[in-house]
Figure 1 (cartoon, rainbow over the protein chains, first blue to last red):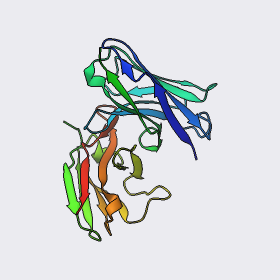
Figure 2 (cartoon, one colour; figure 1 turned 30 degrees about the vertical axis):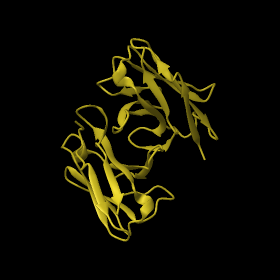
Figure 3 (spheres, rainbow over the protein chains, first blue to last red; figure 1 turned 90 degrees about the vertical axis):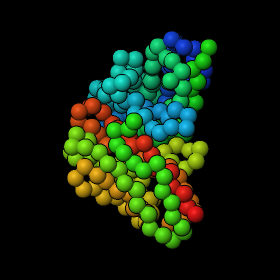
Figure 4 (cartoon, rainbow over the protein chains, first blue to last red; figure 1 turned 180 degrees about the horizontal axis):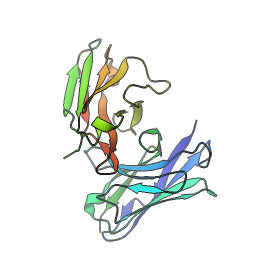
Amino acid sequence: QLQLQESGSGLVKPSQTLSLTCAVSDGSISSGGYSWSWIRQPPGKGLEWIGFIYHSGSTYYNPSLKSRVTISVDRSKNQFSLKLSSVTAADTAVYFCARGDYYMDVWGKGTTVTVSS
Amino acid sequence: QSVLTQPPSASGTPGQRVTISCSGSSSNIGSNTVNWYQQLPGTAPKLLIYSNNQRPSGVPDRFSGSKSGTSASLAISGLQSEDEADYYCATWDDSLNGVVFGGGTKLTVL
């Protein structure tokens, strides 16, 4: 069964760039023609879609975050990544990676990112 | 304020049938399929229903989904204590050109 594991900086200073990686195991990121997504959940709040990258490499981003978000895939490392620039306290959240685009059928456990000086 | 509207809370007793609604508009639910996620406390969301009414392998048939017009519903029959969780609806929004989630419904099993 495919597994996803998020990793990256847990504490980011305001105005800096948040960088997370999602490692794919027990399966290949290149097989099946799947898309790969990022979703976040602020403390005590609901889910917010960040964006996804198609198998083709095309990306779709949340319009409210589009100017600050980059999602990319590294097929050689079997992983995909999220970069969110110019972060503020409002970007503090649990960040999840997932397989899929319109719906996500495999999720990572999530990683907490706190934005604070 | 979420694009999709869900009741913040719902409750039921063991064995009961409960439904959770999800209201949207013509640009989202009205023109795209709806998916539902279950999030148990402290865990990642889990896909519960996709394409309005399809269950992934392993999801009990106590869970069912439906859609009519610009609204969708999740029904849980034979309610069990382990169903206590947050439930989210989601779909694609043609105007926003992205995935939108409902605000979530916290289900309490009394």
